Image (cartoon, rainbow, N blue to C red; front, side, top):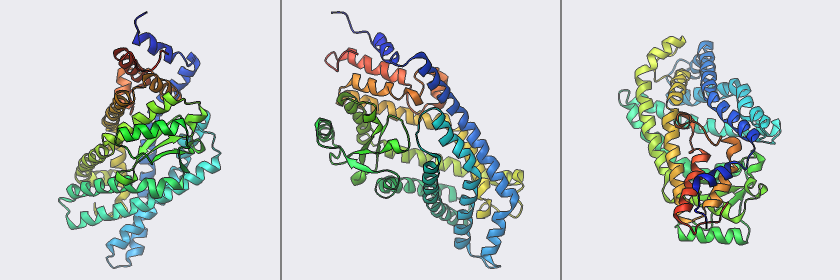
Length: 396
């Protein structure tokens, strides 16, 4: 019997897609890298327009009416800024997240459907961000020298709360989640869940095809709200039992290894660094932007200045953010291979994600931009696992 060759097996899996399909995936992926820059520039331009218009200063003065009303001012001004900036950003968002997705065949949604969900997402996000920022402004007023330390803890708490509540109150507003129907798929997943300490009654299928044609699954929630959800796209693209087990095993890896808490800790550290930089640079950036009438860091009318600083920081910290995510994803792959032992199932599933994530980027491109390991490297690791465990899966 010929010895199993991981390199040849990897090449065989990647060859399932034609050169034209690989070229299209590469164009989409690399265009997405440029979107990071253009999105940051659009955000900065919108914030500059809002600041130079003086509209937030006028709203602040109108709410105050000559008397200090810090909480009311914060809530009203932050809410107004969110709505104004959302409206100004909308044309770019429509291009980046609807038109471009349609042009690459990654969504079948009509523009009206996209706009409706975007507006709902905006409403929810604006309310939540308004409440969060109002609390942060209160900390700035009460502890002007150390607010950035306390604020990072508030952000971490906010992230954890949203992780707990999101699957219950927010995600069902956008999709319908149903238990996996009885049958071999559900039986296999329930058995996997019980074997790995994952809630076996929270294995769901959702109508992800409503928004996207991407082959995907995800894990969300913490504790009693945790669940694993598979997009119906997986089954529309003929996912077999081995694929489902490989993918769900990956998502269970996220749950078992508490990657959500890793993310919360990362968010706290990044918030601490960002707020420190904001504290030290706000006055300078406000002056550069011509923020006339803004009274200082504690004035909510200066929120677009903070937005500009955050946009720049988010852009330059992209390699760090994606590296943390890439590590978690690789860890989840290892969990799937070790505990589910479906290397071919995982490889077949990964190949179906190439259409929105090019398979073989350069090492530098992967380090700078990829929040998942490249599909080529992930399939190769699965095949190396198969070579080291001859009874795993079947030959491709």
